[in-house]
Image (cartoon, rainbow, N blue to C red; front, side, top):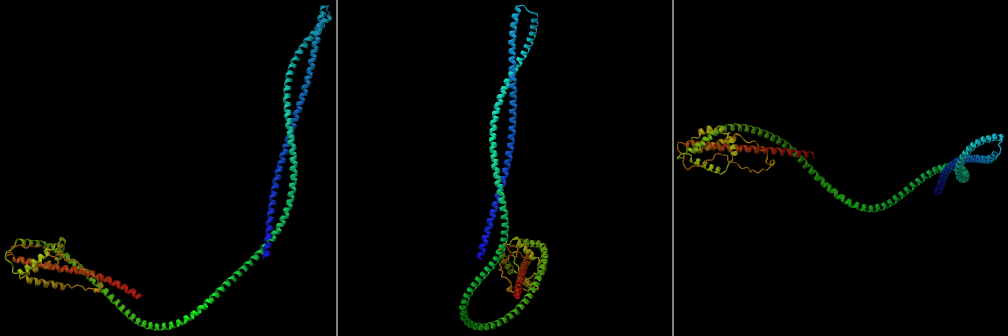
Length: 528
């Protein structure tokens, strides 16, 4: 494994080095290609510059030849002009000599032939003077042109010197460029040779790279196989390590289990003893369970009976509440009727009050004891101040008994004790005639403090006068006192009946709520 991995690493290093060399060769090839391109561009530029310089040289040589030709022509014309001037001067000399000679001849005898010759000579002289003037003019023009030519020649000579200097410099540059081109050509040749060599090396390296890639692929396949085998070997090693760890753990566990086995045997003996005791206790518990099951069955039966009784009691309470509500509706109707009657009897009460205050006689009636009791009761009631609302309640309560007052007033001709006994009998008969509805059991009722103060049921305030009533008004006063006593008793009974009805209704509602709660509890207990 180590040899294979080392060989694979060496081959991978070789491949990396070859790839690096190939990259370097490619970079060199690119650089050479770029340098050759640059050299070719420089060569083309130098060739163009050389051709331009040659053209400039040709132009300069042409200009120099033209200037030399102009100089030669000007020199020739100048020589010719000099010859003409010499000839003119010679002619002038000859003319002067001839004139001198002609003057000498005139002094002597002239000859006819000479005159003709003189005329001809004069003509020729005039023509020659004209020609000399023209020639002088031309000479001056030529001198001016010569001066201009000399100036131009000087300028051209200066330009020629400058051009020669430039030509020399250009020739030096051209020689340097030729040397550079030669060097660059040699360098290009060397680079082309190097490029060819590099191309050959590149082809060789590519072939080697292909072979190495094939070898690498084969080596990678072998490496993958070896890695799989190595992974399997690692798995086997890890499994062996796990097995060894498990074996060591199991051996430690076996040692612990052996110690635990000894402890468990000791505990087993203890548990056997505890098991015996537990069996005896279980037998005792089974007996207790049987007893509890019997009691539970009995309690279940009692619970079912209690549920049945509760349902019946709830039905009875509902019936009682319905009866009480009907009774309250009847009482309300009666109260409305009594209120109507009270309004009719208020005037009678007011008239009785006025008669009681004004018509007081000195003679006492036969029922003085009754009147003294009534006065004492009135004095007791006068200590309690009753509001107008209590009086209105009194009138509303008295309306139920106003229908019987006329009959009772006609019957009160005897003693006040008889009237009082009759009134007690009638109130007891009325109470017996209207029995109270059945009350629910006390255990289902909530305790409510009876802190209701009973207001004064007698709205009349009577101030006892010091004078004694007269005899003729004794019967009317006795009748009025009996009616007032009956009214007080009737109001007491009606107030008791109404308060008892309200209290009974509250008690029935509380009993109904308690029965519903108990029924819910019994239902949940039965489900459990």
